[in-house]
Image (cartoon, rainbow, N blue to C red):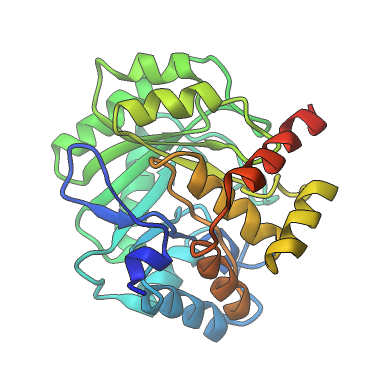
Amino acid sequence: MGAHQVLGGRFTLKGTSHTVHRLGYGAMQLTGPMVWGEPKDRKTAVAVVREAISLGVNHIDTSDYYGPHIANQIIREAIHPYPKDLVIVTKVGAKRGPDKSWPKALSPAELTSAIHDNLRNLGLETIDVVNLRVGEAHGANEASIAGPLETLAGLKKQGLIRHIGLSNISRRQYLESQPITDIVCVQNQYNLAHRHDDAFVEELAGKGIAYVPFFPLGGFKPLQSATLARVAVTLKATPMQVALAWLLHRSPNILLIPGTSSLPHLRENVAAAALTLTPAVISELDKISREKG
């Protein structure tokens, strides 16, 4: 079985030459606890990134505020110079306070500095995709994103960014972005229990725009569901594998970025893309959102 089959098929980012395997890798867990500082075992962190690439991953999601700086430095140590088909996606719009907080960083100076930090720590001259992260810790708000998005569009014109995405946004904010710059992806919270973006996923699919869910198993407190557990046992899989497989079946524009600092867990995540869910199983799993209401 080829890597593209194992990793959920391929998706071409709209308006780009980038075709990625639908199952990628998220770098948040490469750092220490609370996404802060060095990992407990840096050699293993480097090995995880290298193994992801060897398993066929060609889409890495990261940010220079993971650590800060640490995740990007580990990615660079592990696989620079980068494979030609690798797409690196980063996020800007926040920073880390000395108390490990996540204050917003949306001014022109802060966004420009963040782009240069990402370029330096990743060892790049241009970033493939930059997501503008907005909203609150609990989800999207309805604040205008025009100002920060115009800053990123200017940096794109300078050649520092190839493409722009949006993270933690509402549909209204997506619509606000349209006159400002092309958007290649939206990254929001979405999973078996958190399906507020159902219609938005469909809308973006119709436009050929990638939708990238974060928290595929519910968030910092993993989803507890008897239905999910029962299906996982039936399929001889883990609940996380089933949750990932459901997302791949949900819509062809969904790209996954599960993260881990464990080699066995990485291999489990990749194996999830080979799970086949029957219509009956999908119907069972679809009940979870109604259960969690």
